Image (cartoon, rainbow, N blue to C red; front, side, top):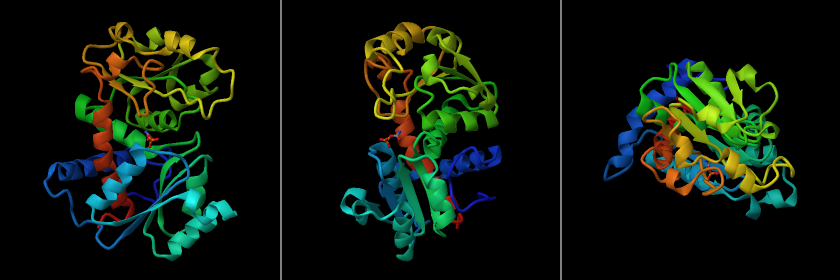
Length: 306
Ligand code: CP
């Protein structure tokens, strides 16, 4: 079995079987990162280009490591020192990169739909590394991988996603995937940060954090996205933290053995207390480690899995 498309643009467009295929393929790549020589020849001779129009620590590095561990050649494209500053469009930029025989283009862009546009406009495989408020599929896949590693099954798992749901591409990708895999998803945040109609994606909506956390098996905290947010969605950061920040007291309301997740970067003392971020319940750095194996699986599968 392989993915139905040459690209990975969203989890909304994948079936549960395709999502599980990626997680199972990641299982076989995970041990590579523990070896002394962290390399397999799976993508030898292939070229992967990182095309990031927004800052990134985890995703860009993780894709680069994943591609190198598969023996691909990797180019990191920097828009600031490219012809983008002379007015070249995203699609023309990608077509020029494709003309140099890039096999996979990984794109992060501030506009929702940018990855889809590229996927339709080039023959190379396109992987979405986050497009505006739309989706961040590989982040959700590594979240799912980490959940599956700790909790074994998604069926009936109570997952609370907390914070700025409106501006979160991570929340949107997770909502699509968790619903397909049978989890019970709750979203919580201030009314101004919860998009209307989110229930249609299968989520229960809570405006009080304690309600969402009570009995939850997993609490996924989101960063307050001050750079995307229109002003005035919440009075002050201190108020936000008091009402929607996860602290040790609130964590006690969760189910025994509950996991705390965060896609990063974390704002310590805003959406998550420092002691919770560093606690035994936190799997935040496991998420980052698993990201490499999951992205190896994605690169391998979009390249035809051969
Ligand atoms: N989680 C995530 O996308 O982090 P970066 O912005 O550092 O890539």
